Length: 102
Image (cartoon, rainbow, N blue to C red; front, side, top):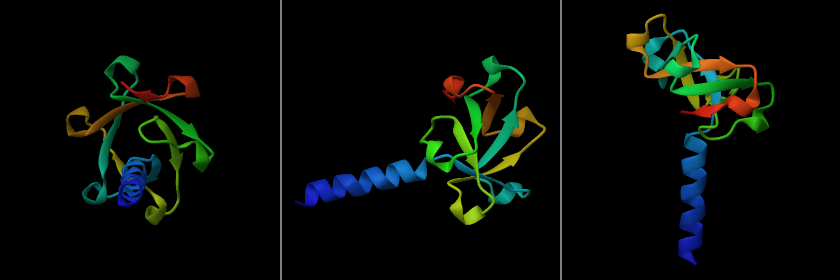
């Protein structure tokens, strides 16, 4: 009986920790990810599609929902001008089908 409960709890924690509801911060020190936006797909670690619907954001899917509230966000991100500073390089696409980790 304990095993299914633990498995369900692990799944909820694992999925929730990696969902992509994203909040843009202006302070590098509070960011979970420091993001560099590249102009070339080949340089990116992740291809990102920005959605208007929170329900479309999934773990490491590359489908990002921008939230206005820091407390709702799974990732707080800071955008940098310097590729060398980044913990994640992204390319923003217009096509949902292209989104995802590389």
